Amino acid sequence: MRLFEVDHSKMPATPKPSESRVPSPESRSWAARDLAVLWHPCTQMRDHAPDGALPLTPIARGEGAWLIDHDGRRYLDAISSWWTNLFGHANPRIGAALKDQLDRLEHVIFAGFSHEPGIRLAEELLRIAPPGFARVFYGDNGSSAIEIALKMSFHYWRNLGRVRKQRFIALAGGYHGETLGALSVTDVPLYRATYAPLLGQPIFVDSPDCYARAPGETWETHSLRRLDAMRATLARHAEEVCAVIVEPLVQCAGGMRMYHPAYLTGLRQLCDEYDVHLIADEIAVGFGRTGTLFACEQARTDQGCVTPDFLCLSKGLTGGFLPLSAVLTTQGVYDAFYAEYATGKAFLHSHSYTGNPLACRAALETLAIFRDEPVLERNRVLAAHLAQKLAPLAAHAHVAEVRQTGMIAAIELVRDKATRAPYAAAERRGLRIYRHALQRGVLLRPLGDVIYFMPPYIVTTEEIDLMVEVATEGIDLATRA
Image 1 (cartoon, rainbow, N blue to C red):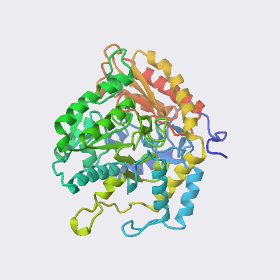
Image 2: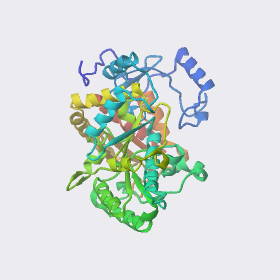
Image 3: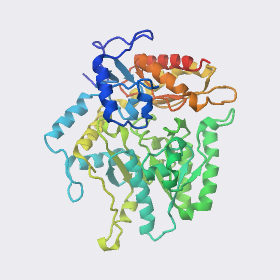
Image 4: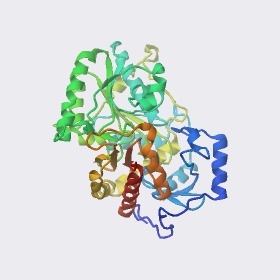
């Protein structure tokens, strides 16, 4: 069976809204054992209490685009399990590569030692990435990649004797992770506000987010206009700034805010002009999500696509199988650290599982699928189908915008369409949609009142139809008075 030939013939029918979803004793047992010992991420655990707002759903297995619980009920994974799963759960090709690697080498210290999967993966990443990169540094996860890039940029300038460069510029509404360095350059109050006393103080600049464009203004015009604020900030602060960090094209956790590639083109030129680094956080948007293998490829100059000084990758890198991240950088950055040990210029950053062979092997097989299958071409067909199905929602009385970049689509829910006034956060309208979707066998996880789709690349057009149908039902239910 080829990658995109998914057999659903033995799967149960999608449940209707009226069907009961009372969990079995086995499911209830697993949920109770979980709640007795675990603390889940990004969750108010009180919501999982018997009288709470959120059901806990123990999953037994996955198959393709579907998750299956202990009662055999299935859930279409419309968000790729936090944006990680590219080619389906229990993908047999990636699984076979991991089984082979298990019999060879599970892990080895990556300081002073090396191994074939780590070497081959770095070679492949440098081959497929935008031109100009020369070195790969591995981490454990997305936040780790951001920490590496921030530290590497800061340390680079220090090694060059430019010690005034200690700050970073980030975009309003951006999200880069929840470790302290990554959180410092994040501008989502839900995550940042509590820990503000612990965080560094970057300079936040207006986002090119096209939701804020004027009536009749194009995405490109708006995004280019927002470069004025970045230019003014760099003109004032360049001597103290190490780097500008952005999520190319889509600010994901900040509400799936989207902008035109022309902003990246202009930003690269500004960073060159003012002598600061550009860090591209493609942790969520890399590996085909935006329509090209890397989002930066869509930003063009006379010399070709934009190449940042640091490219941060994770999530889809291993196809959703294992945690791994990579930071790609240039030979010039590497050379600033290459010296006799006594100079103190070495980059002494490490993680115990740096370059884990199993994770690297999973990543190699994931990249091999891109090489062997028409992934991007098929994604463009799927994205067009998704756009067609979502188009009617633009007329909904409580939808302010339907937006899409490649295989990422979002619906902005509002109380008042004319003024774009949002619902009060305490009303948790998005939660109503989440719960309805679970009843209908679809995993949606709205960002507040932004409903989004980021499905695995093996999703079918019929499954896209189901996603949109269920989301539309949920929006209708959630916007009732």
